[in-house]
Length: 428
View 1 (cartoon, helix red, strand yellow):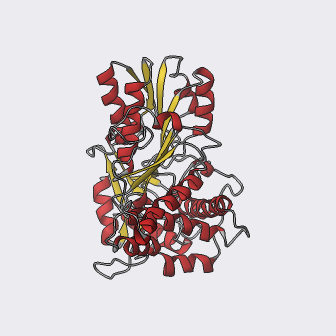
View 2: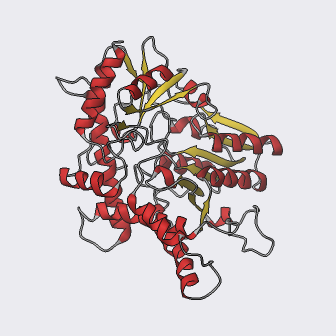
View 3: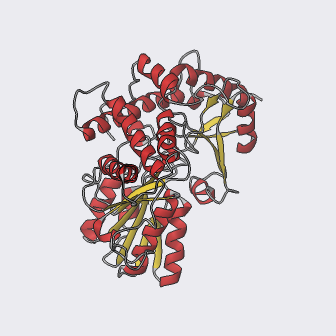
């Protein structure tokens, strides 16, 4: 992540206004009650882009089938080509294959299984902060193959995984490293570039699978700078709709044994492929980021536009994060509200995406989340009782957290409103 603006910089107010009013659904009110609200649960599923919905509907309404020939069928076929080009540009990846599925979890799970079951080696390395789709896939495949599972522990102070704690577990017999790019609990961005570079000094042909689901909507992913073997993300966390995961696999991973039709190409991981409308929404998502980038750079190069758009998103969110943490003299930030604690509060904001993990003295995370909802703020509790959260939150040294996740369309005024409500709840 660029450190050009270590505490972030807001997008121009007129651009933020256009994004809120023209590009996204339901930014400031609940569609069920039509009441004002702050939706700060975007890690669970972000605001939807109007363009992704419209693109999907326009294509999905067509009854024609892909691969049947003719003008309309050929048009539907072109949707996948456009989506593939967009995803390659997003990931800055040229070779390998693009794959879609119902969820990103399926893609990541299958990639991990393929490596562990097919690649020689006696051990696999992963981390405590992995999403269950990664961690459980590693554990399952290791049990089936008899390979040792090695787990790097969380740095509780930063909410991250120190590169050294991963590197020390890798040896010449490691067949796979599975590492998350950003924790969906703490918001910490892992130093995957350093981890991959140093681990491949130990094992040059080491396979690496990287869960990028949480990071892709908030920062750049670059396969040239960080050449891993598999990445994935979920459309619904990036302005798209549920039911679509997308990813990229390196050429060598894509050709490992996996579920496919007998006469299908060895590097094809799509059993029939996604709906053409799903491909269309991926293109709309990519075009949205390029549209943001076009407000700051004058070029026709799509990667340059995408990089600028994602940097502007990241910098805006970093400015919101800094404001939420510090506040003002009149409105204290969460670091300064009595009875409120920021978990894994790394002061280096360049190593964090816009996720703030909070606990409250004398209050359960679930009760706090409901108190926020009563006051028109939607957040989410991530607790040890959840199969999707238990290992990660416990690795941070707590039983649960209140996860607060605004988005790049939000404003400082909305953060101030949130801070006032937080102080009110803490004083109950």
